[in-house]
Image 1: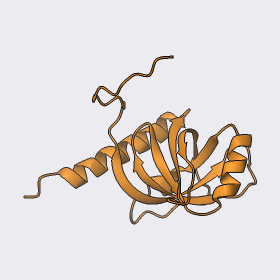
Image 2 (image 1 turned 135 degrees about the vertical axis):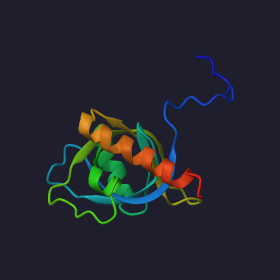
Image 3 (image 1 turned 60 degrees about the vertical axis):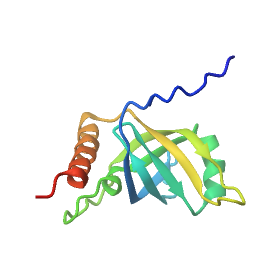
Length: 142
């Protein structure tokens, strides 16, 4: 296998929205399992970068048993200010695409998550949130 040098061309399919949003997530297959907390550091239509500070060793152990699949509470990811949340979370599936394990230099667990099997409604909600946030951040103030 030959190693390809980086050409400087962006290969991502979607732009990243830099953010710092607290989210809830769970390990797929653990229906009655623990719900974890983390922070979405950036997101796009295709996925997000998740930062985790607590329960890192437990997560790493359970993730390998769950085929690196997570469920993300969509309501916490794209919460709209002023709207009351529902009692039942809407979980969207994702898989761990890459991971940076904690080290002595950086004790944070980082995971790149790719959304999987989004319903048309979930995709529409994520798409609208990302587009609305970009417009809000970069619109020309008059």
